[in-house]
Structures are given as structure tokens and as C-alpha cells.
Image 1 (cartoon, rainbow, N blue to C red):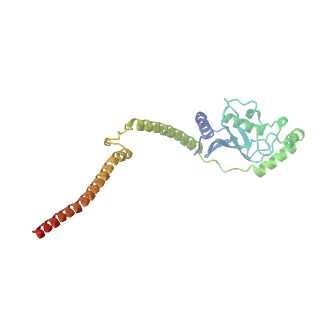
Image 2: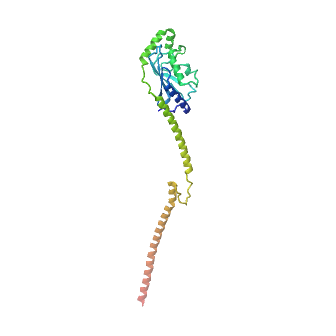
Image 3: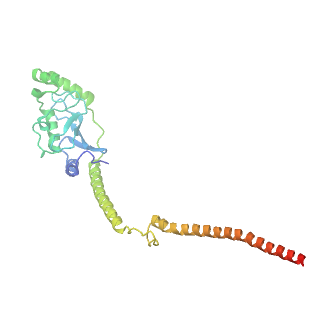
Length: 267
């Protein structure tokens, strides 16, 4: 499923509409696909125009959308090796639409159509592939032979993009954005509700209120435990005092008995 980590939500929304339009009514000779892991990478398969050295070839390319798209143009690259004056050896595309002539109002459809037209009418004056540019100006037949050779070797038909993949991705993306918005609202409501339902502080000498948390209840039970301990200590102390008093009484009784015996003997 596509993500929106690299693009603002408003751009993603507009992009989803345009990709859906491209999927439902593609331009002639162009089929678009998306990267399910990154919505900012757009793939396209371009059929070589008839009557050109690229005829019968299928060329895969990609457009990379920056975070500030559409204020800055996408970068275009051919993934299929091609012999063309305006396409560098690393696949970079040189066309004014993606450079000085870029306008934020231009959509992906316009960009893809311009790239396909580049296969019909190259511009050797601004060549990235100097060999192809020079050959095109000096000897078109030799240039066409090289271009057809590259096309026959590299531009073989590619596995087709999954039918309806763009619609599925854009639909899932919209659902994800809706779920994220709902989740954020639910989290805010839960936080506000929790703040309103929090009980007031419990007095140290009072009993725990109903519905109070376990910490409050634990705090109120501490004095009871202390009272129990104090009572036990008090009882033990009383017992010790009684034990100390008992031998004293016995000794007193014994002294009295001895005194009486002595008195009887004298008599």
C-alpha cells in the first residue's frame, strides 16, 4: 500500500486523483504504475512511436517527486537503456518541461506525453549523450541504426502493471488518511475525558472515595496498619509490666508469712 511520508497530504490527494485518471484513460502509448511502498515514485511504460528507431520497443521510466512537488519539477529517468541525445547513460532525461519551463499547474499526464514526444523529435542541441547528439546531426542513418540496435536488445516488452493497482492504492491511501484523522480525534477526546474524570486529591485523614484509584486506597489504609501495630505494641508492653508486678507480690506475701512464724516461736 502506498504511503504519504514523502509528500504533503494535499499533494497526495491531488496526485491520487491524477493517477486514477491516468489509469482509467491513459495517454496513447503510455501505461502508468505506482510504487506501493512510496507514492512519490511514479513508473511508466512508454511504447516506441511508430516510424522512429524506437518502434516496437517498450521503455520503462520513472518520475521522482520531491517533497515540495509541484512547486519543483519531478526528475525523470529511463530505466531501459536507450540510445538518445537527450537521455544520459544513467537514464537521466533532459527536457525543458522538467527544467526551466516547469509550471506547478502542469500535471503528470503532460510530463509523460512530452517525454514520449522526445522519442519522436530529439533535441541534439541540448544533448546529454554527446555521441548520439553528434551522430544525429551528422549522419542520421547511423544514428537510427544505433538506436534500433539498442531498442532490439534492451527495449523488450515488460511485465504489465497490475490492472487497477493505482485505483487500489489511491483508495487505500484515502482510507488510511481518514482512519488517521479519526484516530487523532479519538485520542484527543480520550485525553480530554480522562482529564475531566480525574478525582480531586484525597485528604490524608479521610477514607478513600468511591471510584478512587488504588494508590489513594493504599494511602488511606496505612493509618489502620499503624494503629494495629501500635495496639499490638501496647498489649505486649502491658503484659511485660504485669509479669514484672507478679513476682513483687509473691515476695511480699512470703515476708509476711516469715514474720508470723517468728512471732509464733517467741510465744
